[in-house]
Amino acid sequence: MTSRVVVFIDYQNVYRRARGIFDLENLDHPAGQVNPNQVGLLLAKRIDTDCELKQVRVYRGLPSNNHQPKGYGAVRRQTSSWMKSGSPEVILRPLHYPANWPNSRKVDGEPREKGIDVELAVDFVRMAISGDFDYGIIFSMDNDLKPALEYIGTAFPNIGLAVASWWPSGEINKNSRPSTISIPNIKLKDIRLNLVDFESVRDDTDYSH
Image (tube, rainbow, N blue to C red):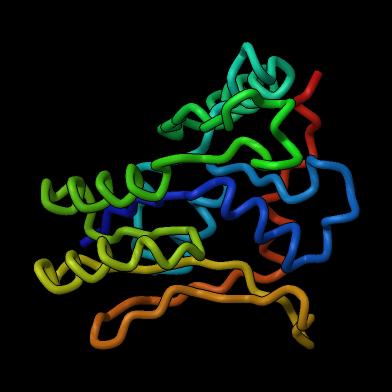
């Protein structure tokens, strides 16, 4: 019987970790981008050859068109590109801006995502309860997602669970700090994607113009 797979991608977490793990931080901003559709297919194959990728769900922050029109346009163009190459479900949440930004940048830092991990976790649990997938894969290295995995792993032991993370090939760069989500007593497949995997799904398009 074919297993239905749904992949949940915490996009900025995946992007930032790729830049760190694969030593891309000194390159222009497109380095580290991936095509979610290709990522979904790759991860489904890592589970079993008898798996069907039902859906890819991408969670990410959306810059304000007023505060950061260039960033807003880039995300919109990138999302449109994803739709042309497949049919991911893209969930966007507005970025949180510090008061008086950008004048307060030096004190309060850059805009940041709010609620992305919570929305991903809620959808993951909701869809598992509804029987929308036989195997759920979370691509993120955010340990805040542990409770969702713990709950489904305990309440629905027949549902397959997996987490995916970037992992360096060969000798580990001490500055890359590779990590993965680990939960004792829960059957959780650990999918580690290396540089060869990254190269197969990378997207170097500059969406800023």
